[in-house]
Length: 400
Image (cartoon, rainbow, N blue to C red; front, side):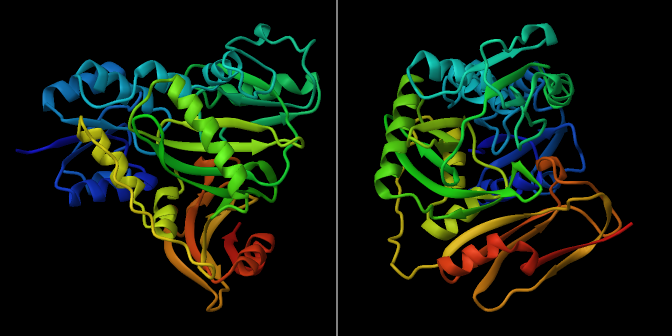
């Protein structure tokens, strides 16, 4: 019997999952409003419907009699996938839980109501909703329903808020904004992907996030495994399990952003109800041997799916792995990328999203990423040198 998977999207980050779904024998239908997205070349059929059009996607799913719906690596599409799957009694975490995980003000309220560490915050859709009398600057201003660091600004005083508010709204489908007190972080921001089964985290891989040298609010690199101690990793996992247990989810793929403050308190900054972009699942598979893509696809298609994880043992002298986002700090015409690697750094995958002659823009979010390179590093010293001196290894060639 033909098993039909409705895949919301078709972006570069989603291509590996679309191709893998085909390898698993699924009939793959992609849907979004961008016919030029590369993923549609690999699906069995494509429909031009926005991934945020709930009724349009629902009608399509009914018409095609699909067996599963997935919003791999897409925050805006995740609530739609959960809505459609709920309506059709297909595998999905609860819709309300997906909304809490995917919408920043709902997530912060959930954390506050359940005694997790969370910064003081205000949210609203109108400028008049924001009064900062009880807030301490600096503040982070961001859309409640966007991803990839799009629309995010750090402001030092209230006079800066109007511009930040307008900027954030440009990237918000709901036009709703959240303002959070800035929490001073110790060490790296921690990122990663994981899979939560029935009542526990079946697999998670934490890694260290590297900020863009010209905009610290925009990540430009990520490496695994993390430098965090096993004890701290275990404490983070327990916080994740407590949160997802309260949300009564099952078979959830998640992408996370976690930080520690100066006192060592854990902040679950974000837990997206989907796999990460920038090819995080592929990076994780190189290091761990675990396919987060398979977990996501099979759990979307099999009502009684049970994860079976076989993680490879990491040896003391094993390699380290990481990706770097190819980007520019200025506007220009893309001519190409020059690498200066030796045998201690191996390129495992190179994904270039732009073509020679395209206009590129300063890297203010994932929408201005020019590509991603996944690398294997011989040891931690090589990895550290790479991320500390990127300009030594990469040159983006632009013309004016």
